[in-house]
Length: 133
Image (cartoon, rainbow, N blue to C red; front, side, top):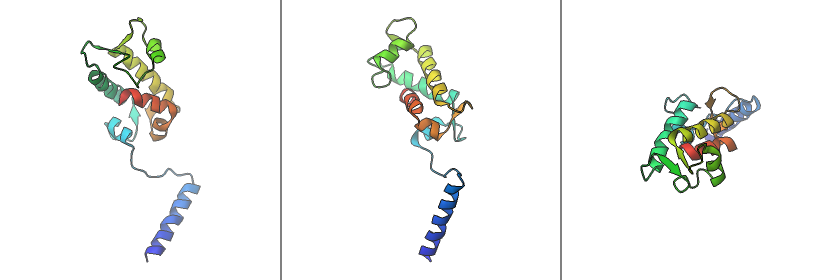
């Protein structure tokens, strides 16, 4: 009986795959943490909310800015310089959230205003995740 069930399930999985239907998989850890409305996607506001909380956590000296030391591993020195319009070597929360918005738009390849699991796994999605989680 078990082998028959296994055979049926395997057949269904093959048919599902051939038809191009999406697989049902558990949401990734990133999706679970960012998708606060549980709709299976991340929108810009959800990304910004998470990034804002991360900004506050990273701002260890409570000066309302992040410098290269506080951003270590999230933005390179070159990326920090490009995102720093006033060239003071730090990012304010508004400047940081502009980077989030830019990276979100880069990851949103279908331009629907949301990111699904595939878009989060992309190179651009991974770059976004580094600054929102």
